[in-house]
Image 1 (cartoon, chains in turn purple, yellow):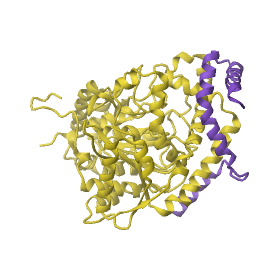
Image 2 (tube, chains in turn cyan, yellow; image 1 turned 135 degrees about the horizontal axis):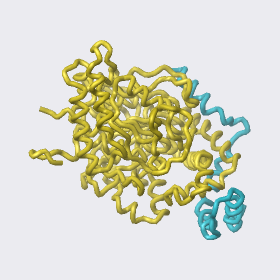
Image 3 (cartoon, chains in turn green, brown; image 1 turned 120 degrees about the vertical axis):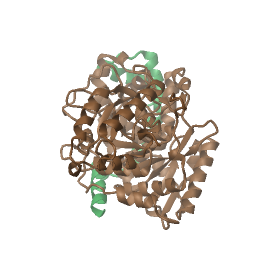
Image 4 (cartoon, chains in turn cyan, orange; image 1 turned 180 degrees about the vertical axis):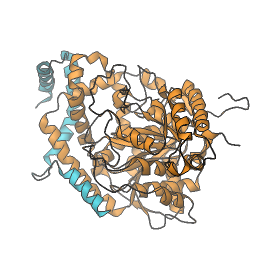
Length: 67
Length: 481
């Protein structure tokens, strides 16, 4: 998604959820959030299919069992 | 002779347990001190003197053989915990989240061990910031210099413990909310392993990262408290069934150990973020603390923690997604009820998709695995900064734009959130004062469930230094603060 459409999308999401969000605020929020989302997308792209959302808890349990 | 509120928790508990000190006397002394301190730093949302004294009188009638390890010890908790007859404020005047629990497990455990609640402590609204600023209840101020903030979100907890208004306090830490104010106020702040202390009956912020933490004057005191608060709670979905620690004796013996008690301990350090993110005085104090640790026998291992720091964005998305789940409906109905910096974060969170949340959860397991297989193989304890500098001035936040206030919170979160994301235990350790007389802290982290290692390391450091013995807001000969 290009930056120019990010504010539009955020405004659409906000409108669909019933949240009042002025055009200018949506643009500002989208512009501010864009680098964060780019970074997150890069990180998420490095995930393997078997990186399971439940693994976190399982690792903690295993560490507890080791003592 | 020392005032009762000057005693360490360990000494106070010993006197109370043996009956040498009456519970009503101890609570009365702390209530007086807390009232004086509260006038200066606004650490309490509610100081419940009558309720505390009533319970104190009950405890004075308990036979010695039946007294708990914290018999008669005063404490208070960040106002996010449910009590049977009272809903928490969460730092806002209109707390409209409904909670199913009728009582908070951690308060039950503290009181079950004999501790006496003196009231409820101030915090950032919803626990969703890190400065201690609060437009509705007033900011919690720093007892070392009330022109500065206490840090947050467990702001009142850190300020009260530092000012000797309480021997210990209970806080909550999602992305640094115990460790940041602890560093700013000069006390020990422990964020235990995710799932170690029950969160049942607390106002959540991010289910996948929320922990209940402890603020105390020393590592020895924090160990005494952790032993009582930790333990599996089958009614807390985050709880993991790992045996409760028994650390008090171990940590106290480390504090009394002879030469080089940390012999063989490998301390991992990434100097780059410390030097990049921190003020020169804070770096110098951290380096001095490392020197003390090496003199105590520890070895330094140079680490590259870039990979761990990279997960900060995933921690942020996870918090956004889950806080939006919590607050979305209320925010939609009444956005003006939210402080501007929280409203900005919730507005941004509306852009999170379900798949983003799942990706963040998948990254959480990977982050923990990479930390365990890399840095925490090379080192037993990781040391890093707890804040870029000392506590910010109150006016630097109140006069700031919402963007600037948010940026201040984010600068602090970046140092803590990646560790919170991995669920490992972490501890904020005071390591001195800058030239303005404000405390500076460092952060220690270790493998999951290794709180004992952190507390031992901190206790050894505190046995060789006296920063933790210094107290702000000293009384004059005439008794005034």
